Image (tube, rainbow, N blue to C red; front, top):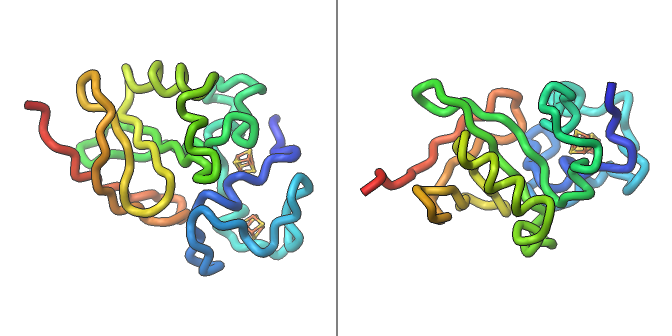
Length: 156
Ligand code: SF4
Ligand code: SF4
């Protein structure tokens, strides 16, 4: 069973309604590299949260821990049933998507799944054919059932 170790990246990149915490800002309760200052009393949504790396079924290697690659991956259900992944990138390290291992990881995953890359806010990057494009998205926050409504242009 994996543990988060020194990683707290989800406590930064994700919005948490219960804490009125916007995305891409550190939670006021985080103790960097140590964890949560209110661990026993943290909101249920934090207790229930598990990023893809933490779920060993994802088969992400140990070296892909979110704080190391600069991004947190989460699955989402697309309207219509197909599954996708959303990749929340640390906005302070935007160039990380062009560095390894994230660059190859995004390319590989995007051949099989719809990948949305978020730097916060309501725009995401996604792959359309061979091109990465930017489109609008409405992301619910960390509620456990992430509703994603991407306005992705149809393939020409
Ligand atoms: S991003 Fe994943 S590994 Fe990092 S603290 Fe959150 S749940 Fe743990
Ligand atoms: S309450 Fe704790 S677990 Fe939840 S976002 Fe803040 S630091 Fe992270």
